[in-house]
Image (cartoon, rainbow, N blue to C red; front, side, top):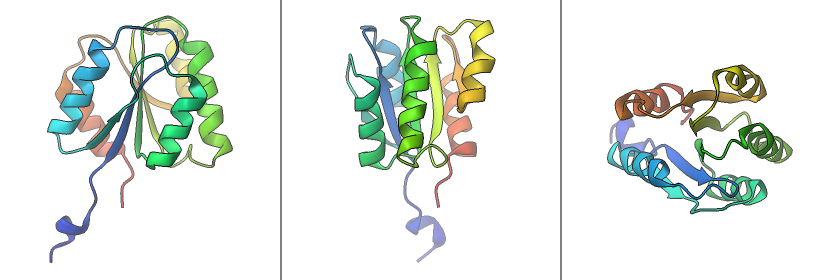
Length: 138
């Protein structure tokens, strides 16, 4: 039995937080991650930060992809990060944010713990490769 056959797939949660009802991008990235061989859970629309934290912890995900287009990223993403930290899951979770994030907000989100921010038009291959290179699976 080779080492490759015992390594588990990267587990991802793609989450739609808040009142943002646009989920096409989240569905596209969920399919791309699935096609790349990742295990993917999709939260569905209109999730509270606490629901996303609970799902991430219960599913023991390696990657949390937060899709947000509503402009509430500076309020909702910190709540998710605080929740992950309260469960001791922040260090083990690669946090990605996708959507329309103004340039002036990106550095603050990264200081909080967001690993990368992917805007509209980012090639799927770039996102998949980032996850492969940075998700800490054993």
